[in-house]
Length: 117
Image (cartoon, rainbow, N blue to C red; front, side, top):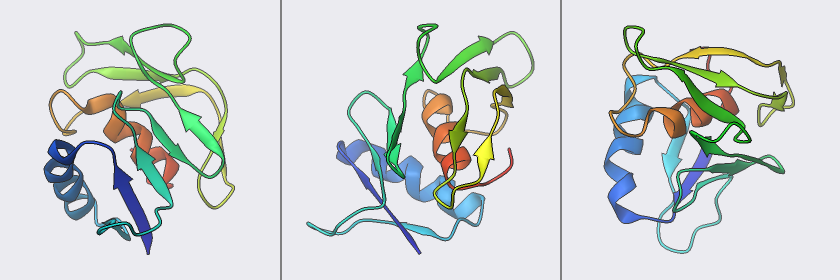
């Protein structure tokens, strides 16, 4: 079971919903519990010794590439690894069905947890 921490209490709702919807073997950290993955204040995802930055800047690891497509697309700009060491090469990532306003962060979390989206 992967423990997910988050800096902002307001992120707990959509994170809980995302984990349930995708059947992730993950749960939110409780109290001061040690986490495996952390969502910071800016929506970046930390885990497995890496930081997946999420935003509109071309220097971000995961950035929006086409919001005009149905559901939108993001681009994984560089190679990353799942928590279990599986390499994920740069590619387009669909954002369909991800929490509105948190699409990039949700996609980063799913990639880190090895969920094909």
